[in-house]
Structure formats: structure tokens, C-alpha cells
Image (tube, rainbow, N blue to C red; front, top):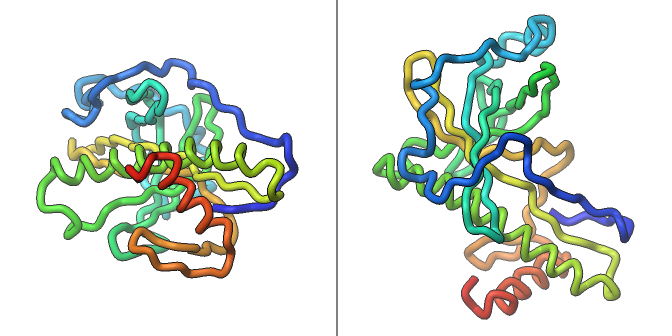
Length: 221
């Protein structure tokens, strides 16, 4: 996504409390929540009621985020609520509104993206698709920060990518669910280009960034 910002305003990141590094979460997608006794949900009943019956009950999950510099995955337990019905879908995925709930019962709005049933023929391929999606988005944002630094004295536009993680959820039926999660943004979605080389808008910055990734990665991306 692209937006006009004031120079000097930037987002800083830090590791979340209680996170740990895992080298290979794809094998089994990390720890199995079914082997641990579920804790009492931190969500307050009054807040859960205010969300209405459109949301599933709170569920414990393991959240995996990719560390580009260490080339490892970090795992952290969390509690999530996901809408029963999707609000949008594309050719490969469905989008559901979701909330991540902290220990005080506060809700952080997000979007849960699930691949459709016909996207992959095996569970192994599907698992790889979810982790590849999160890794790709994280690497893209790292390159975008390099691009922004290069463009500091050239324009007042900057490029950033939303942080994407993998959620591993297990419901009452003991069925494991994987999904990608990202923060929810209000506003109109505009696609500037795609992986097949199509250009959708006249804005030059997205195209410049696409070429920058090719140069920056020495033609590997």
C-alpha cells in the first residue's frame, strides 16, 4: 500500500513478550494446542456480547511471525475471534473479520484470510502456502524500507506492507485450522499491479518499487 506521510514518522517494531524462536514451524505447525488445558478466556462477557452472534467463540491459537534477519519463525499463544461469514473473497482466498484479544479483553481488529478448498491438493502444500504468504509479505516490507530510504530526497511518498502472520487454531472438534492474519484497514482497496505483470493504475511509485525489488535482490525476486 502507498500513502503520503510526513518524513520522520515511522513505525518501530519490537519482539512481543513471551515470544520464542522456532527454526521449523512448518513441521506440525508448532505446538499442538490440544495437548494443553485451555486457560480461561481473557475476553470479557460484555465485550463478547457487543460483537453479536456473527463471531465464533474465542479460541486459543498459536501465532507465527517471520524474522527476516534471523530467518526464523517466532511463536506466541493468543486468543482470537473470527467472523462466521466472509465479507470478501478473491480467486484463491476468503476474507473474514477477526479480533485478537489481549489479556485485558481488549480487541485488535484484523482480517483472517483462508485459502479456498480447491487451491491445494494436500495439507502439506496448504501449510506451505500459508507460511510462504507470511514470509513473502514480511520480506517485501523489509525491502520496502530500503526503498523508502533510497527515495528520502526524491519524493514524499513511501511504501509499506502490512504485517502478516500465520495463525494455528484448534476448535472444539479438535480440527486444526491454519489461516493468515493481518491488521484491518478501513478505506477502499486499490490494486496497482500483480505478479503476472499487469499494471492497474497510473501511479509510478508501485512500478518503481517492483523494479527496485528486482535490482535489490540481484534479479532473484
